[in-house]
Every structure is written in C-alpha cells, then in structure tokens.
Image 1 (cartoon, rainbow, N blue to C red):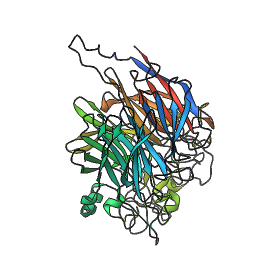
Image 2: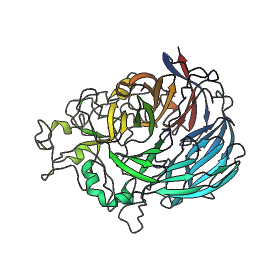
Image 3: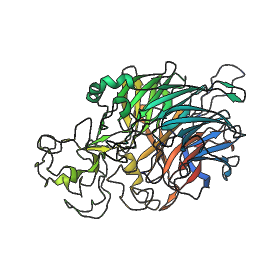
Length: 560
C-alpha cells in the first residue's frame, strides 16, 4: 500500500482498507441475550453522501470513531489527516486537520479504536525510521509518539485495542547509486498501555533478518527476491496487515515479493513466509484483455477494443490489501490482487512490454506454435505485444533462455480477488474471481469506458497494465452471510461478492459512482461501519477516492 505522492504512480496502496470490520452474530441462550441478527436475502449499495476536498490525491485511507461520529481521512496531497463530522452521513462536514510536520514527512495511514486515533507517519527522508502518533478522537490532542520501522505504510489495531501493528514497507530511494539507501522491511508491534485518557506505548519491531540465510530456498519456493544487492530483509516489503479475531496472529502481504508473511504477535516473530504462486491466464475463466491496440489482427497498430480471452501467460498476484475471516472453523484470507512493479526508483526498472522484451521471439519449448523469432504472432501489439510484464521474474532470472528467447511472460497482478485458506501447512488458494472484474465492467457503457484509467476516460487504456486494478478489500458479516467489498482503483467502483462459502464465492453487485472522467475516481481505501455504530443506523461503506480527492458514503441496503 504505497501512499506515494501524486507525482508517483498512485499507490495504494493501500490502500488499504483491508482490515476486517464485521458485524458479529450474537450468541443465543440467555434471556438477556439479544436476538441473532437476521440473514439478508440480498444486498445493494447506494451513495447517500460525500465530501469533496477539491484537491487531487487527497483522500486515501479512512477510519471511523463511533463515539464521536468522526471520520479520519488521510489527505495524501498534504500528508495530513482531515477530520470529518459524520453525524449526518449524507452531508459530512470538515471539522479540523491533524498535521504531523513536526514529527515526520507525511501521514500514510490511520486507525481508530474506542476514541484513540493512531497515525502511521513516514519520515523525511522516507528511508529513515517512521513514527506512530496517538491522538484523542474528540480533543485531537496528541498523546504520544513512538518510533517504528522505515516507511510505515499501513496501521491497524488488534481487535481488543491493546496493540497497534504497522507494515513498514522499507522502500529504497534508489539502487546502485552512491547515496542509495534500502531499508529493511519490518512489522512494528506497538503495545498501547492505555490508562484512562493517557497512553504509554512501547514498541517491538519484527524484522526478517532470520531469513537472510534462506534466500535460495525462498526463491526456489516462489518468493520473489530480486532487488539488486538486497538482502532478504531489505527485499521484503510489507504492504498490508490483517489480524485474527483472537488478536494472536497477523498476516502481512509482501506485495512485490508475491508472498504473505505470518506473524506471531505475542512472540513478536515472523513464523513463515508463504509464496502465492502464479495465475494461469490460459485457463478458461481466467483470461484478460492485454492490449489497447487490439482492434486488428496481428498488427502493431490498431484501435482499442474489448478482447477478453485466454492467453499463454502467468499473472503474479502481488496483492495489496488483505482481510481475514473464519468459515467452517477454518481461517481464510482475502486479497485484492493489485500488482505492483519496482519501476519508481532510479537504478532499476523491472517493467517492460512483451514485444520489446521478446525481440528474439518466444521459446518454442514453452509456447505452442512459437517460431522463435520476432515474427511470432503473439508478439504483435494487437495480441500480447503491449502487455507490461516483468523482466526480473525472480532473482537473476530475466525470463529468457540461453538463446535470448522469452520463456516466461509474467504480468503484474491477477485482475482479481482471491480467497486463501490459512492452515498449518501454509496458504492455499481456494477461490479466484478469474476474469469476472473485466467481464462485468465491460457492461458499464455509460458509466465509464472499459479498462479506463482513473485519470482519464479512454477505452482500453489500462488493458496492457493491470486492467481494473483491484486495490482494497474489506469484509462485513450480516447474519450468517459474509460479504467482500473490493475497490477497483482504475475504472473505479466497488465489487461485492458473497464469500460465505469460500470455495464458491459469488458475485452480488457492483456500484461505480464515477461519471466518465468525473465523479469518484481512484478508490484507495474502504471502511465498513456496522449498523450498530452507524450514525443513521444503517450499515455504511466509506470509500476514499484518491484521484478525485473525494470521500464517498455508501449505504448498504439489506433485503430480507
């Protein structure tokens, strides 16, 4: 969840709102117990309000305090936090701004627990150690500041509020230059030590140094370790965190590394790193549209058209946001498979296009029918030629054989969300939405052009580069049903799926409040507000739209 400033490729990121915020099912038995929550037959979304900053890149991450009815919104343009009064969800009002210029460079993320606000604050320069700052949600008084790892990019409370965890991404400033700095990625566990209105936090920062000697084994297992000259601890970049409902275990996406780490919170230790593998886009139902010049046949110039289908390439999941839930006594993780390339830092750029990279053709031993020359039909721009892929699949591998022919075509992101079972044996995929996002957004028409960017309304413009780009995910439970809400960063809007049965997740609805090149664009973070905490007594979904700088309030309407 990179909360990059607008001058960089917009990140998340983060954005982030992948923390599980679910309504719980009450237990039955005692006369004093409330009745169990009813299970809805259907669900729909509608926008009931919003807040416009009037500034691009000014709404990224949100957190809600039910007692004060305040919404805290990370303003990425200014590196501050806007405080909104959400007493009337249809008309949020800005009350104040929290500034952090005296303790760091920018606020990257925000979390709230029972009136206590926690901010993840990036240093200036970002490669230095960051901070976590605590505030009173009502008075906005700063209560404490502690030091955490480099570039804390996401922050979350444990369910009981006793700890705060940060994903410290530790991105480099460059590679190979005299002034290059590549901090280690880490997870900081901050024990809040709350007493009345005061806090006395202590910090344990969890690093990955124990894995430095395991680089070869991790690469062989599928963990991407490829930063030039980087140790394992430097190469791993924690992005987003979800925490088990008992507060004992955290799962952390390592986005660029295509992996998830498991953290024992009490022991302050990374217990495992799980590679996620690759998505086969040649399989039925797992296709994609790889080109914005696909209006011809075997051409290197053409008009954009919609052409979703199977292609002989692999997708790296590279998830941003992550959430977790329990079903049938098992723990499941839900990831938004945004994809991200190391292309922003001087000295190294893994992003290339198929036709340019495969100038000596495709390996006939890997690609059926390939000629092994630049005339291979798949290399035309109307086919795979314009698709952005990595030139560094893992380690020193450039994706080519000894003759210089491409033997790996690995694209960034999977254009989907995925459900994984987190078991004793590791992380196992049980469901992937395949090409559903592209197929369903294809029918938008009047709302936005297919695979348009968040900063334009051009048909097909994002097809060669991660498509709709699922960024954020949050979960909500109503009765016995659990729903996943996934934000699509580029084309915009929120997809909703019923994930009650993890292996048989099903599409429910989609809402996009964008109108062409205007409206809410670039959803970065999602925050669920249960009906029991909502100012209007209805469950709400808050959408932070980074590009438009708007915060949308969506009401979740349940039918029984």
